[in-house]
Image (cartoon, rainbow, N blue to C red):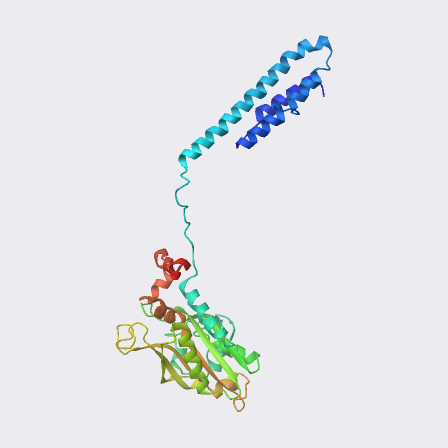
Length: 345
């Protein structure tokens, strides 16, 4: 490449040069005007040019050096101006901006706490389909053909052959577990369930359940009561107590409703416990021998207990949420109360 071509090439580089920081401006100066810079090397090469050519090239060489010097001054001034502007705008003593943090939904938080409580005593987690057939949702669980739960007022049926419906409880998962696994069985089945109910402050057409199942040789009602007491104290505190009231469920016999001493009033009575000192938290019972037989488990050898609760109900008692509909409205003002920082405080 001739000396004229090298001069033209360096002039193009000077025109394109940029610097965002003082360090970049200094690197430009060293690369162009330093002891081993491109312009300096060009002047060394100029010394070897014959005398009659030096006069023609000398003026171009001096112009190149002047352009390089001027470009460096421009870059340096531009960088200094940016730094001064930044320093005048930013107050280094002001606190940093804290970005808003998200959180798990309150239902998810409570569901995981329930799972953790049962995991500590050996229960595994089982899942199943939300669209179920009649056998797993009703028949295997000892629902007679004329049971009210089969009526349209309670169940969302799916159009088409096969008698499919949106599951009304996660007990259908327990049926699938018993059909595919031999005892001992110790599992919980959390998930969404659906019932054709009017939406109100105390009810919703879709909600969440966690049901537990324990099947083995010699399982007794005393073990069920011990598990219930352990669960209530683990989730609500060691000061709470439970009581069982006789009830009826097609898939358990005997069956009971579980009440817990009110954690809000401590016993004297309040609006939450309807001035009784007790709040209902779940249903339970010993697995009906017919259900075991329907699932291929010999009821002469094995027995078991089952219990089930609504996650929204448990969340209401822990967080004291007055209206179930708040869980579904996605109001950031409501959900912000459940961020980790807020709960820690």
